[in-house]
Amino acid sequence: MKLKYMISALVLGVAIAVPVADAAQDWRNTVSTAKKVDKLVAVMPATGNIMIEMGERYKNLYWAAKLGQWDFADYQAEEMEELIDKLKITRPELTKTANEFLKNSYPHVSQVVRSRDWDKFSVMFENLRSECMACHSKNEHGFIALPLPKRASSPVLNME
Image 1: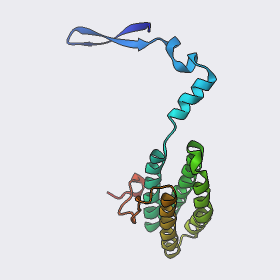
Image 2 (image 1 turned 90 degrees about the horizontal axis):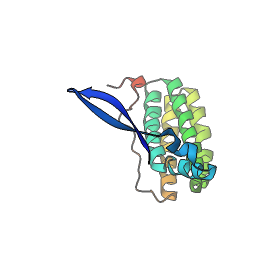
Image 3 (image 1 turned 45 degrees about the vertical axis):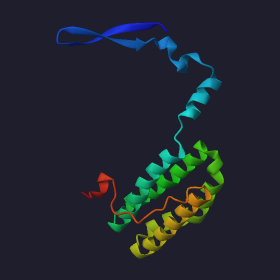
Image 4 (image 1 turned 30 degrees about the vertical axis):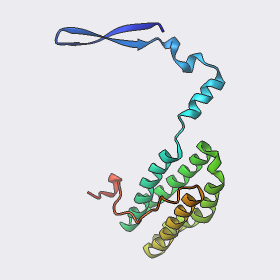
């Protein structure tokens, strides 16, 4: 591979040569469309990556509602639904259970959040938790159980 060198820094009076890849070697410019698609599919988020964000949104949804920050709770519910839609794209084998989850849970989530009623929300959230765990079981991840969130991670909720 042909490399160009660039002097990037002087440290204690010594020049450091840093290799810089030739732009012509960038796979985005040199491979076929099919190979580009293969590379992009290979780096798409896995289920675990999406579920890490889902867990954060789950905690923020709960605490936003508990703290009466209903607009933020509504935003979390919308983002969770979008994550499930992304999951269906990145992991098509999970589409059936993702659609079941959306059908069984999501119409109630947004509706209850918009009601701004904590008592209704807490019942809905318990149902959501159960649906999450049922979906995990259907996808051979029944060992992933969700507790009620002890705190949220979003600085918006100011839970220092």
